[in-house]
Length: 205
Image (cartoon, one colour):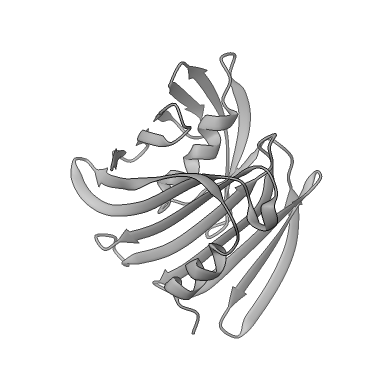
């Protein structure tokens, strides 16, 4: 069985610099439901330029306790390079995605099965997960003062949501299929998020 720890050790291989890290405390209607260990680094594996976001999540308060690890590598212009989501609980499964121009190739690996599919991609597609709020870091980075239209794709459920992200200083307002707000610091880290369903997340060093 693949383990979350082993998966994260594999994902973290390679030289990276300018690292910032912290813990996102996630609450629903004021009650803590999970924590996410987040690392944002300049650079990608094999010395390539861009950014790498690594997330380790534990949501013990969920109906089915969730534990997962995610790694998102993006090119210098913000486009998807490589995405990996290792879900340890409730069921072990790995999702791998890579950008290929206007398409994204998504591979799903579970016990006894291995499937691949192509889906629309491009610079306006962001990969998200309900138990990895930190992935909204990419949304904040792509947001513009005039507002940009984005499509969020959730690999675990297949859900797609079209929404807008408008940046005003360090604050990003979300509207459309996903509503709420994001706040980032000068290094691009997500420090606070307010999302549908009474979800809030705040950064604890």
